[in-house]
Length: 193
Image (spheres, rainbow, N blue to C red):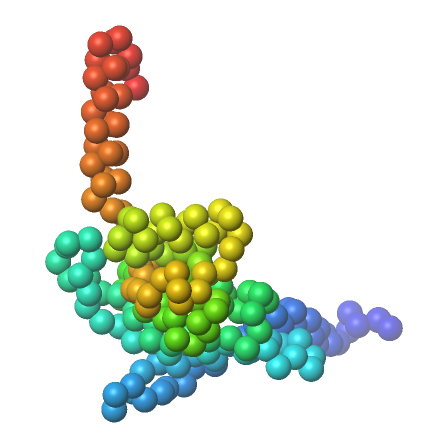
């Protein structure tokens, strides 16, 4: 077919991009009489009933002894499909959402032992990159991760966790001492950066 004489050539249809594996729907939930953001992540795979839900709201908190900073409080995070990446994807989304609403990527939550007492979420959150305010508790959680063990309510209590991870005072002091030591060595031996 010769289309050179047509005033308007035939339409070319855009081929749609592939639909992502997971989509997120925003709604609102009630928290102590106040509306809070609720996000439902669901799978787009045919026949899948996989879901994750997160309820959250921004608030001002104190981190690392500093003045109060904005942070997204994840009041509830749950999934009906453990091990399929929905919890991690929802936390990744929470960081992006935190930046979008002015919380600068900060988020915090209470890692609760009551929902699943024989497999508490502390390890999951620590693997994601969150920390507690206690270096010793972080170290204890890290030991469970290293050994590949699940923690139970007998091992830990409900505890607040933060992202980005809190730099503990001991770590700061050790880092400062180490930097001073390196500076001293460089000075003595005349090494320049």
